[in-house]
Amino acid sequence: MKRRDLLKHVFIVGAATLVLPAYLTSCTSQPRFALSRLKLTRDQELLLTELTDVVIPKTDTPGAKELGVHVFFTKMIDDCFSDEEIMIFEKGMASFELYTLNGKTFISSDKEGKEAFFNSSIVNDLKIKKFLETIKYQVVRGYTCSEYVMTKIIPYQLVPGPFKGVVKVN
Image 1 (spheres, rainbow, N blue to C red):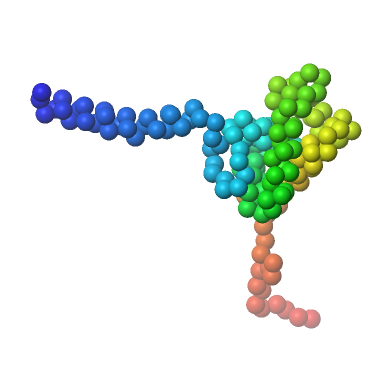
Image 2: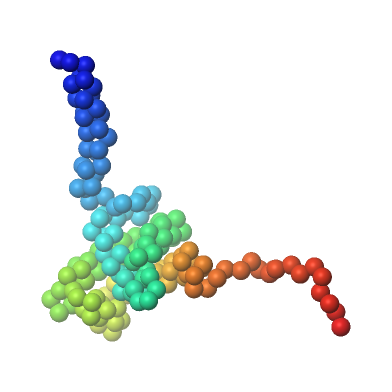
């Protein structure tokens, strides 16, 4: 075997060992971001992403889905909620995944159907109501704390304001 062929084969094998783990992990059901206490699957992450899109949809400004608000509020739930609150959230999410409205789940519904899921008079399950209230609160909180909102919509200003050293006093 020639040296050039050997180097080519070594390069191909090396590149394959670097790229192959990324392809293998993309097929799993693990979420794209790591959480320590809150356990999510990819399907649940997709569900949370779609829920954020219903709470604050895209208009002339980016919606919550485009800003990645679901990553913020899941991290907040993981870090700031007690174990009991996380358990209630997970049970509510599991119940919500199985809940059907007009024979369709949330993910399989169209836009109007997804909005109907947030009507509190339709949902009779207390766990689902608590889950949806938590989602609404956390999405609005995450959206208003996002970099886009703080820089483009409501420009952030430091509390004391600008210093004006020389001011003419009458």
